[in-house]
Image 1: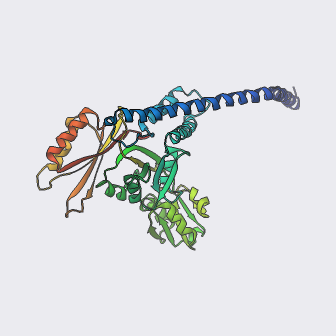
Image 2: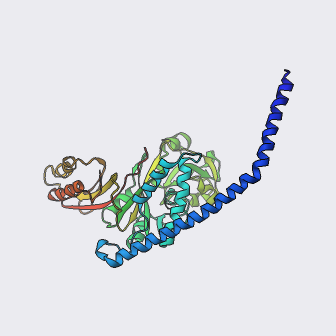
Length: 389
């Protein structure tokens, strides 16, 4: 058969399939309409059950207030949230990807908790920061977001009850611990309720050309995550640390020859051009955030606990004695850090993150034994382990 006749035959079959599909189109659309109706009814039924759960929590508080230390029950339950996402991923057979399905249910759960209670979340602003992005990806569109000018203000918003929750950056996989967060954790009594992770892609934004940039603004973490790129591409530009990456964008937008290292979303928010994308030194660059509240959630059997303590440095082996209890009780340490106490020179506050939940027997025993060797011990919170694989 000549090639032209063969192509013609293929075209004919394609047209036949198209006509068949077009003939089915009205019925397919009708099926979509029917499914949408079912979905709306099911979503509202789920919302009513969510309201019933909220009412049941409040009723439990009224009947037996001793069962909770909270003035009002929490509506954001990270342990339950983790269970929901794990179940969705087990049930999902496609064609929707797990990430797409999880994003849909994030908004469903966001709407549900907003029905039970007006939820507000403090974060390091202004809008467009990575903290803003991390908070939105965790809490969805139905809660109120309250930007703060610095990390300490996020803690204070939760401590003073101005917001329900707060979100602060804790550490970055490239540049390490966030010092401002660590310093406030030395004396706060807020509790860590959850953790969340965000893959961070840094961009250079400016209204000037790369060769004309003389000054670069960013948060210290942002500057630290792109050191190699800056050495290679902007070796003579002045690096200016500011309180947030979005503030850096605001400053760069009104200054000729200035640039900001921040997220790409800041380009449209603050009227800047993207000069360079994905300039982070390590492409798996990830920031870990802590969600703050007035209490921790219940155990999930896969949790972490963050503990703050000090020791008497005059006693030989005091730090070693305080740490050995974790091995004795079969608790793995995933992070250890220290900060100057500011009480006297060369005196430190230590932070350890261990496996387990503060309500687990072995964690309770470990904390109790630490008190024998340490000047003070304080559990900053327990939360589901959600570290990406």
